[in-house]
Image (cartoon, rainbow, N blue to C red; front, top):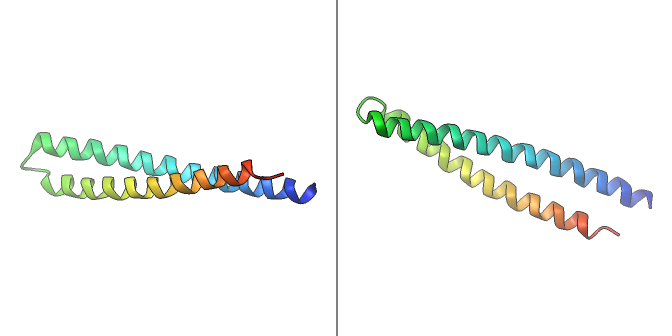
Length: 82
């Protein structure tokens, strides 16, 4: 009983950590998207900033997908505890 409780607590902490990483990825993605759209509106002056924003947006989306898979795996592990 105690081992299951300790394992559940550890999985809960892992889930919290991964969800915080997902929030950071979404935040960076939102900021990059706004920067990219802003650079598209101003076209000439901020083209390099727009390209960098698009790269950050792409990486944040990839990291979010990886983190989401980990979160789903942790939830499955928590559900399977008996």
